[in-house]
Length: 131
Image (cartoon, rainbow, N blue to C red; front, side):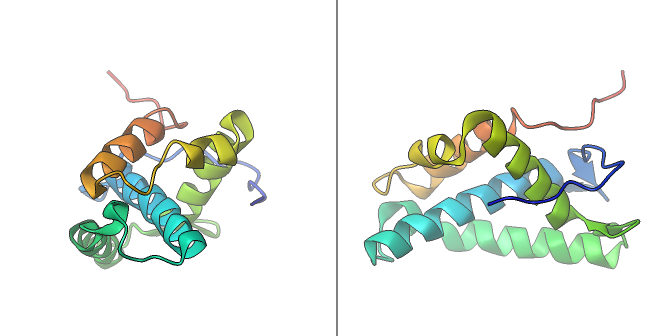
């Protein structure tokens, strides 16, 4: 998992177009890890994925809202998804993807896994809020 970080890239905002980009990134991280765990075990009935639908519906809603408001894509060739991938890449370089992924357990509830994803994403390189 290696992605080239474009020159001039800057960390994204936690709120984009009135939507919670922080939560969107947490859902994306959770979903990525949950799918990996399910695929590896060949078991899609794990507790970690039992309640995933409500989070995935919220992810889709946020993405559609951002697209409708014209804030999902940004210049020169970026997007909210690309920002997620870059921040995940930076975190992986710092903490190691295996170490990030190993924190998630198949027997966790979906809500526990989301709480963990939020705590991981909270340590990512977000735009500094102005006071």
